[in-house]
Length: 215
Image (cartoon, rainbow, N blue to C red; front, side, top):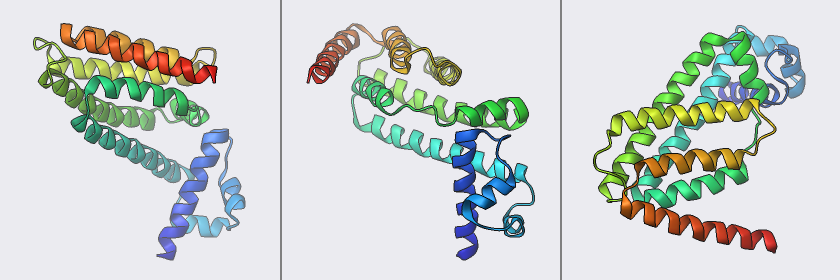
């Protein structure tokens, strides 16, 4: 139990430091100093820094998978258009670029790890999009003539490109970009009934948000 606790502490500390300063800027000494352990202790758990980086990436990926699984469960119980709209508002309120330095260094110095990470995340997003699109059709809000497999892959790719874009651009508002992408995707998928419902709910939410700003 002690072994696992220390290993987790090293991973957690490395994740925080990598996110704040980037991978290249943080050494094993920095990590050890942060949690007050010797390098000898560090090497009991990780043979080298690259091994730690892989584990950090695995943890981040696992957390994303958990969020996707939670989102899939939510989709099964709610109106998909409501879920899309509420998800956008939640993203705008909670979006932070904590991993910008980390992903930048992964892209530049560990391209193989980055590609592997992106592929696994892509698979998870595609699954989520497939279930969401299928439910939209089942509930009579999305067009019945759409190819669900194609749509799922396409939307998943756009989500990832958008998040990557936001990581590298600080001048644009994340909320505006996310809203724009969602609006395009929803309008391409909905039937007449779905469009009417979408526009009504969107207007209600916009009015509600404006009211909050005035308080």
